[in-house]
Image 1 (spheres, rainbow, N blue to C red):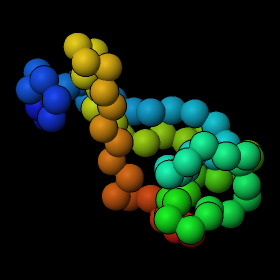
Image 2 (cartoon, helix red, strand yellow; image 1 turned 90 degrees about the horizontal axis):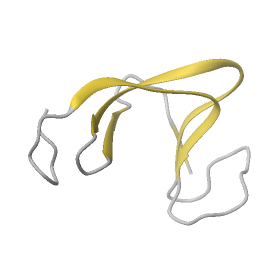
Image 3 (cartoon, rainbow, N blue to C red; image 1 turned 60 degrees about the horizontal axis):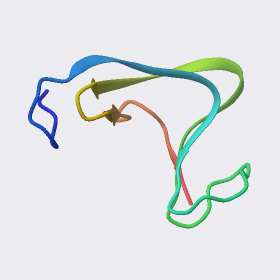
Length: 74
């Protein structure tokens, strides 16, 4: 995949972590449920998660594919 910012080739891998991952419009205190307009990608206190992603080390951008996730929207 080419980087949408600099057009360099991006490296495929995974964004790995634990617990909660959400896209939010504004920074705020973490809540259990997503607020209006937010997308909760992962919310698990027991196991880690993997999200397929591509990284551009040139311009420091990451693209995440969450098409295989059951998401919750607020």
